[in-house]
Structure formats: structure tokens, C-alpha cells
Amino acid sequence: MIRKAQIQEVPEIWRMLHDFADQDVLPRSMGDLYSQVREYFVYRPDQGPVIGVAALHIFWEDVAEIRSVAVLTDFQRTGIGTRLVKECIEEASSIGLRRVFALTTRPEFFERLGFQKVLNNDLPNHIWSECINCLKYPDKCNEVPMLLDLAASDSGD
Image 1 (cartoon, rainbow, N blue to C red):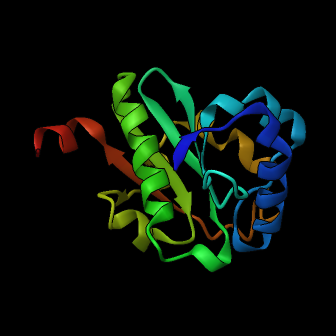
Image 2: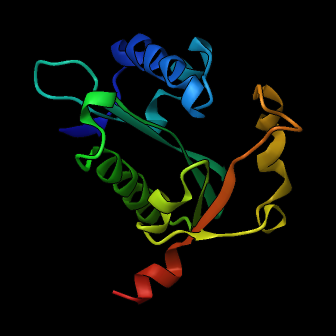
């Protein structure tokens, strides 16, 4: 079941993001996770552990980032990641955002969801402020910026 994260799940989310740091998921501090817990969606069976996580982080009045997408290895390629990202997209649309983006090393995943590759300059400059926290900054960054225009995807339905 996918739902908003709960405060008691923050340590579990923190461990998951740190476990996936070697797979290009930026780890977050415990303090950041507590202060941003309402940005996170989790996939969790009724009695089991958190299996997947994704967040929608609002940057400005019209743009947000889908970030921290991670699914436990044994459950990858089962549609959980896709469902989590779609939940973030639905949330973005429901609050009136016009665009969502992702910085990813797996652009093909986001392309299947309607995102398009863009140039770094196509995204607002202030979104790059968090890059200084990345171990790959500045010279070894291999993330591809992907953008989804929600207005265009709404008119195509």
C-alpha cells in the first residue's frame, strides 16, 4: 500500500536511503527527513517493513523534484517504483504544480513515465544548491535532468 510517510518511519527511510547511496540516491540527514517527512510516500505492506520510498520536494510555485526513489532489491522491477513516482506526480498535479523534474542515472525509467531529457540550464538555478551535498559534485556527476510538463500531460488525456 502506498501512503504518506509517518514520523515513526523516518529511521527506516533514513536507513533505506543510506543503503542506496551507492546506487546514486542522495542520502538525507535524519534532521532533513524529520522536517520533510510529509514530502515522502512509502510503499509498505500492512505489517511489513518499508519496501519503497519516493518524495516530492517543492522548489518554487510551479516546479518540484521527484527525489529519493528507492525500492528494496528483492522488490525491484515489480512496479513499486513506478507506482511511487506516479503518486508523486498526482500529488504535484493536485496542488497546482506545472512541472516536475528528476535528476537520475536511470533516465529510461523516467522516460517510460513521460519525462523528457532536458539540459541543466532548462531547470531553475536554485535547484542545484543541494548538489554541493553530493559526493560526486562537481566533477563526477552522471545524473541526467528529466522534466515532465504536467500541463502538457493533462491536455493529452
